[in-house]
Structures are given as C-alpha cells and as structure tokens.
Length: 420
Image (cartoon, rainbow, N blue to C red):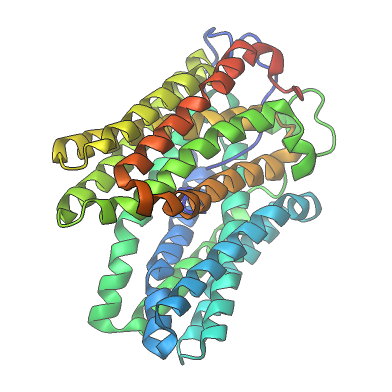
C-alpha cells in the first residue's frame, strides 16, 4: 500500500530463462516505453495522487469533527484495513474478472466515496469511507502492477519496474504535503474534490489496456497452469523466501518513517532531510537493481541490498550527528530500493502468467505487513531502550535474513519457476 507503495510495484512471470537472467548471459533487449505503458503510468500517478492527497487530511478532518486523536487513528486504521482486505482477495478476483474491470472498480471505489465526505458527518461515516477507499486503492495497486508486467518486455522487466516505481514515488513527495497545505489554505472541500477527480481520471484510458494475462506475451513458465492462491504460493520456497527478505526491509521502512521525526527531536530539519534522502536513494537503488538484475540475475542482489540497508540503520545510532543520520538514511534507502526491485522481479519470474494477481498481492501484503508491524512492535521497545537501539535492532533483523538471501543466490538457477 504505502509503497507504496510505491508503490509502489508489479507483476507477471517469465520463462525459465536459463540462458539469460540467472546465468548472467546477455539477453535480447526490448523497448520499455510504449503508448499503453505511458497511459498506465499516468493512471497509476493519478490514483496515487488521490491516495496521498487525503492520507493525512482525512485524520485531520475527523479530528476537526470532534473525534480527537483516537478518531484520527481509527480513520487511518480503517484505510489500512481496507487495503489489506483488497490484497487478500485480489488474486481470486483477478482469476474471475478481467483486469480492466477490476481497474475500473478500484478507481470508482477510490473516487466516488470521497465525495461523501463533502457534507461532513460522524466518525463512523468517515471511517467507512476510508475503508472503501483503502479497498479501492489496494485493488488498483495489485491490478496495475500486473498490467505493468504485461506491458514490459520480459528481458527488461527489472529495469521497467524500476522506472515505473520512480514515477510512483512522485505523488508521495508532492501530494502528501500539498493535501495538508491546501486544506489549511482553501478548505477540506477543495482537497476532497481534487482527490475524487484524480481517482476517477484513469477511467478515460482503461479501455486501451490489456484485459487478461497472455502466457505467451507475458513470457510465463512452460508449466503455466492454474494460478495458485495466496496460501499455496506461500508454500512455494521460490515465493516465500523473497517475501520474508522483503518483510525485514519494510519493517525498517515503517520504523524510520514513524520514529525518525520523534527521535530527531528539535532537529526536525535533519529528520526531513533524512527522509528525503531515503526516498531519493530508494528510487535510484530500485532503478539500478532492475537494470543490473536484467543482465546478471536478480537473486544475487538480495544479499548486497540487505547488507547496505542494515548498515544504514545501524548508522542511525548516532542520532546526534546530522551527517550520520543523512548518510544512514541514504544507505538504507539504496538497500531498500535494491531489495524492493529484486524480490518483486524474482516473485514475478517464478509464477505462471495466470498467477500475476497472486504474486502481486503477496508482494504488496509483504510490504504492508512489515510497514505496519514495524512501528507497532518496535514502538513497544522504544520507551525502554530509546530510538537508537530500535534502529540498530531493525538493522540486525535485516542481517538475520542474509542466510535466506544466500540460499536464494545459490539456488537461483534451480528454483526459477519452481516451487522450491
């Protein structure tokens, strides 16, 4: 979700590619940018803009209506709950309905309910709107990820996903602070209408996007049978191991976003600079990992990504030093971006083309689970140990995943497209 997360993210699958990706041999190249992919990227940008415009505004709206901080938290929780509910059901929905149909549904569920906020209302109504919008956002994310993979050449999927992720990172940088500023200057109604319009804008282009996954076009494995469900996919080592590796990094991502502004104390500008550095290096790391992985294999990037990200978090123990904070966040962002792209691409490659929805939903669930669980769990320790210790512990958590990354690297050729 907050990936959105960035995004945010994507899906499909490839052939075994013994002669290409995992062996390091040169692979045929293809064109990444196309008309349909440009339309899809613009649609994703609009949906993410709608999401971020109201992400911080809706809790403020609830608090202004008399719900207080508890009500603001409930609204955010409802949004997250709706997103997770969509990710849990998206793979089943994608096996039954066309991708275009689900993309339309996601846009409508994000846009139309937002207008119900205009006249104001009780906390229950605001929370219900947040839940429905969260469901639409989660559904849109999974479906658009799958569509992105269908539109990318198999030989350049990693690089294409990196570029797609870079586009998806922009709304978080621009729309999130803009929503709060616009609400304070022009009122909540302006932001609500803008968010609704942004969510509904992609309806104009969905008709030109693919309806379903074509195993031949998607480059799916030869054994591309029926798509496995989420539980069946988790029993496949080729899906479970990348998901577990990714979770350790999303835990750290959730921790720094939640606690760095608090840990930095009076030096709020240092926290802001650190978070900006993390966002920029994560985007660069994701693009570099995709480009590198397309040529030399994505499994070999997991251990370096984990090591770089963990070193960045451990460097955060020197919170009194602005240099250490910004350098640490830069390192963490680069490692996080590398692991983001590598795990997503590996999970895509190991799923038949009919399982795009399953792989996408599983990766998005790993993102949201870690992002939400990190602050909740490590927040219990922060009061006793202090924030530097919490940052160090998340760094050690990523180091603990290195043996799993090593197994992925060692068995990449044997595991491609297999159940592990």
